[in-house]
Image 1 (cartoon, rainbow, N blue to C red):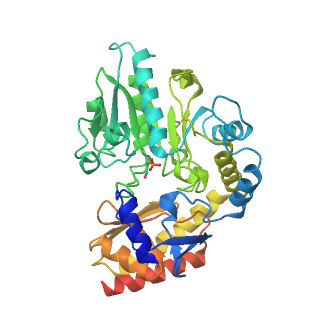
Image 2 (image 1 turned 30 degrees about the vertical axis):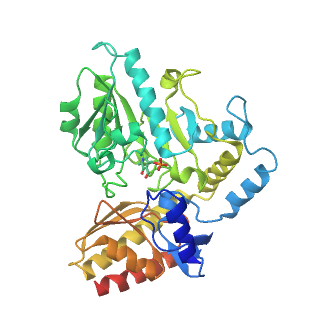
Image 3 (image 1 turned 90 degrees about the vertical axis):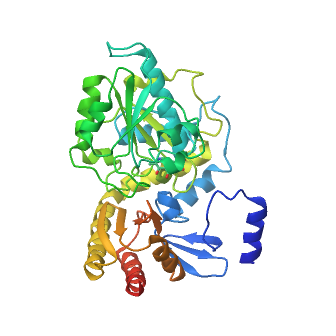
Length: 400
Ligand SMILES: Cc1ncc(COP(=O)(O)O)c(C=O)c1O
């Protein structure tokens, strides 16, 4: 059966992914099962999407109650779940307004378009006439649409898609003077992940975002934070910027927001929200009532059950256990880094081999930036599940 499905994929699905040879059919909590009934502990969580794990009752109940009422109308009309969700996101962050889309890339597209209009309007600036340049970071990841892959500071993502979208400039991540040097009369915004995810779980210096905020204020630039991966409690606070005592002008969200349902959001400070007036941007599917019902359930659950505190505790526990492994296997592990439940283990050995062996042993993990194992478990993971994951990893590293 597995083979037949894989053959059908080969014939009918564009092969943009190198998939693992398993067919997933069911998920519950932090566990998933394949077609042959094999159980896996899922520390990929849909790449930070299944924030409350699989089939969480609060998400399932929300979908069951909303689906018979209204799944989709269009953004030509008002709907109650959409405004309720916007209110919750605004209240949990910096009081801004929300534009809804379906993915992280689309949320970033909205931010890029907003920055362009902000630059054109030249608001707050005395220099230039119509600024358009956006500074982004090397090793960043912002998506796969043309503008977002251009924003992404990685040649391998951009390769063969040129000509790219004009108006982006790349500087080294976690290097404030590089940003300062790159600012010119055309610059209108800085787009940055508070912690780089795909780039290898790279955590900047504690004052990096504060310094960026200061630079943006001085030069009248928008500070736009891509919290597609770091947002929705992933790092132990609702949004990663909240660790750093700053407020961005724009923040983008997706992944964990819908608990598995596709949604993206761009949050913009109230005073900049008029940069996207009626007709300037749109999304047919953006924030359907059904998808919003799931996202509302996710946010309510996180806030009511104090999941942020759980993430902080589990994150510390997990990192400590991984540090134990790094003492045990110094020839294999370079370092452990992370915040909350966004954790990276830089390896000195081949990461793909470790991921494949973990898969055979019932553990789903991911390898990014070539040699960084990335752990993005559901935010509800327990100590026992972390122990089970570390035991499997221990067994795999022993053999390598
Ligand atoms: C920080 C960041 N931004 C944007 C994206 C793109 O999101 P999507 O795949 O939903 O378009 C990702 C996806 O990994 C991401 O990690």
